Image (cartoon, rainbow, N blue to C red):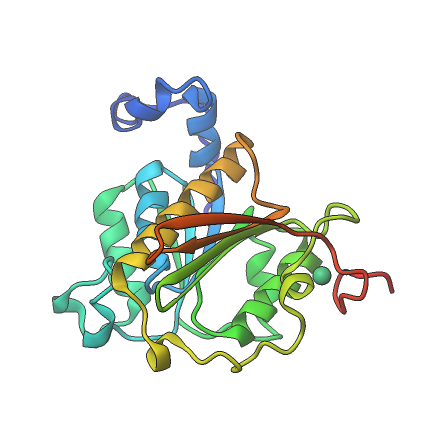
Length: 258
Ligand code: ZN
């Protein structure tokens, strides 16, 4: 990984990020913070597509993309980072090409394999923040546990049918903040089916992935209110958002009282 610390915006960057620079909450200092940030995105699928596009456009300087899949025709209903010409190409390659076309400032690290117990910690610890938009519970638990061990904040989104959820985990920080296991227990694996089985409204991925990108950028800049003790639920058919307060489960097998 290249370690180039940017201390000053170039003329092109002043133009490119002009709408950020006029926001007092971002400004030049915030933009430099984004350019020097490293975010790992799990999954270049429905959530990962808008998430990656907006993080690259925002000038997040280093973006890691983890996905071992190839682009399939059935992905294109929602995975808007990929296109018809890239069917059968690795998703990390298709995504990387699109991100570089949007913003040459951004360094893209691709990981074309599944995360597992032996590789996850080394990858996670190289980043400032992880954004999870994967499509399976096994990886969700793996990422949750590695982020807790490596003290890396995790912004987690999920979608199914017409419903979305979004939250931020910083369970490593103090006694009240929950992790994924605190909210969902240890045994959610494979109980609820997958999007392939039960379906998902394609545009819902756009809503939730875009919301996730906003939370990632807020966390990197340290602005606004974090979702760290809140589970945000979106019901697209009812057009309603609900916020649920969350807290640590003392019996959690990862972060509870030992
Ligand atoms: Zn926990």
